[in-house]
Length: 120
Image 1 (cartoon, rainbow, N blue to C red):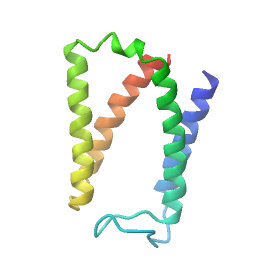
Image 2: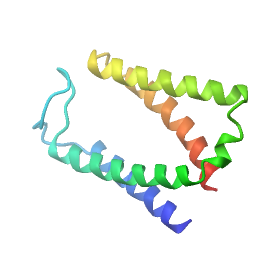
Image 3: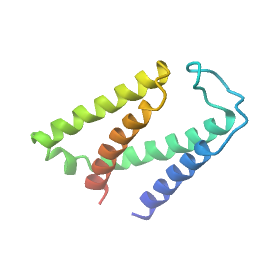
Image 4: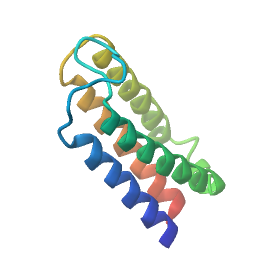
């Protein structure tokens, strides 16, 4: 359990690094308004490494989550995750300002519930 808290802390540190102001020198552009700087890339690597490790730990315990797979709540959660990823991709690629935030909130909320069920 201690390892999981360390991973969660690393994810949060990565988010803080990405949220800090940067020099606005992009490594590459995703769209007119979006593209990661070197600082963003470091934060993203930290987030992705820690997140991947959390997913591996949750996958090892997936049987705790799969017992809900035939419930309507499970189906709704899968739909909401798809909707969230759709909002993220469409808003970033199409420069639709802050719509990506709704997608992040949807996906993060459902993943937090899944992690809570599997990792407790």
